[in-house]
Length: 188
Image 1 (spheres, rainbow, N blue to C red):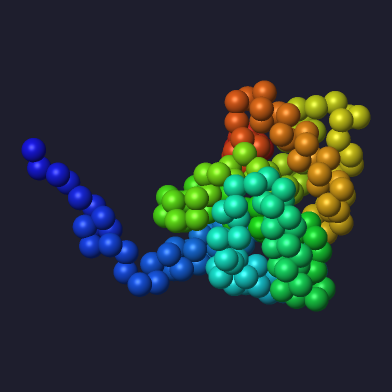
Image 2: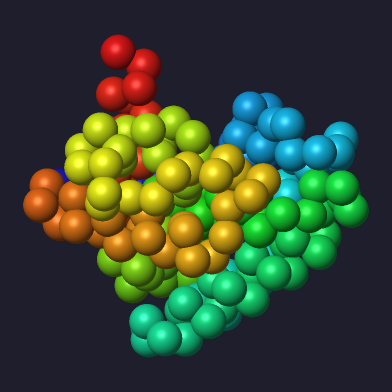
């Protein structure tokens, strides 16, 4: 029997492969419309550049408390890296969540940084479309008014995340995966 080997398995990964992969994931995760209208130009490039060099080893601990603490630290550091007029918590958190979701979905980054451990803790990237989708799944009293990404606070985000966690569990999913279902439902 002949063993078939992939090029990366046979030759290994060239120097810089993972950093290039991370930059690629940052660019594709933060698309042209993901952070539009945040108050200044350069938001997308600033987020991409920050996430392209983010040290993902900080998330490897495997402890939910440490993960959530790191998630907050990363969000706050990205917030400060955004252009002054676009420094809002909601945009920073959405960018981090989009990037971490796509990093989890990337075989090379997920394996290198053991991101599978974080799958159940990752948040759904919130925006107006996701908020509308979640509201359709609940009652009016279950979720607060969506304030918009610019005015999203950690507390309001937390309420949406808790609700999304319940919806995801009822569907047998991790909360982070609910995003693709809501995104597709919004495009029907």
